[in-house]
Length: 213
Image (tube, rainbow, N blue to C red; front, side, top):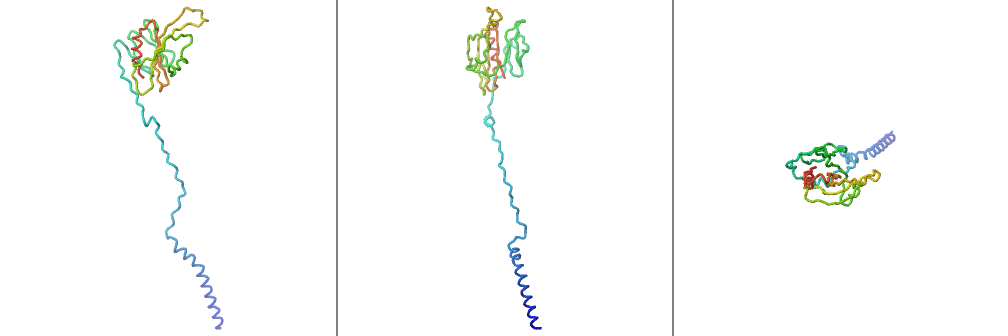
């Protein structure tokens, strides 16, 4: 009977040792584990911050200035959606066929007109010159207009128009003086055409000098 009791004691000790060995890793783990849950790792990759770089014009804005519009004595003001200018009071005007084009008249006789072409300079004018016309003069006029902040050039061009040979009128000719205000930033050349024999040069210059955008 004593032997049986000894065997039971040994079995109890073995079981106790087994249970202790199984529990010890968990106890060890609990000692090193914080009571509060560990923070979650943020696996989100920060996207680069988009910053719009100001363009050159916003960094250095170009200021365009013009002299105030002054109506010369004896003239009347005309304003379209593209420009403003003055013509003599004794003249009349009407809308032309193209956008913002005008036709100038005096006592029912046509004296000239306006036209807006694409931008050109002294080198590319040849692409704009009308057919059946002979160029008599080409000048760049300085000091007539005061517009700063833009690339502006004023040209005075004299042309002699003839009719096509098919019209069988070889003696017909029309002498015309054209003024253009070419503004590169606008991509436009604002044209003012006058009958050379009917309009004095001083009147042409006054009209062009009143041009304002």
